[in-house]
Length: 195
Image (tube, rainbow, N blue to C red):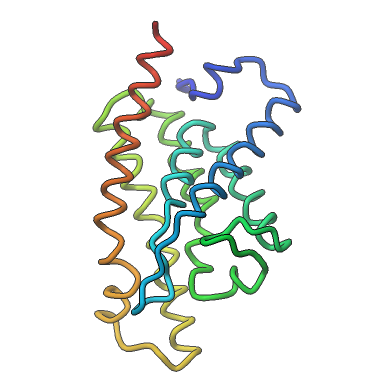
């Protein structure tokens, strides 16, 4: 049995206009969260609010619309719109050191959306937390090998421990905080809707 997403609960009649509006709204939310960016002097990967937007969009819209929303976000960025971290855009950003994380965004949103649709994980704190952590893990599974390959190509790869210090460890506290925030927001939204 398929669980209802927040978007389906708020707008139950699926129409092309509704779906396009949700896809655009999701891409806009991620673009807005990307504007909060903190560059790190030792890493080409900045700390951003993007992952909060990506996983929230996946959970709220579901697997298909969440995936399409992040695909639209990548297309917008590739066209040069300033939607990526710190107000940047362009295909060079997708091909750069953070490209693996960017390309994983639709997959992570799709995964979180699928978990919500199949198991209703967004109804509880721990379920939402689990979905967010799995979405984050997928981002790293794609993003870290890409970053390693980019560093190798640039002659800057310093081994696995340096890679993890550059692309994983500094981001864990922020990812946990964003996952906890989402785990509070989504079940609260469902309780509000229930009233």
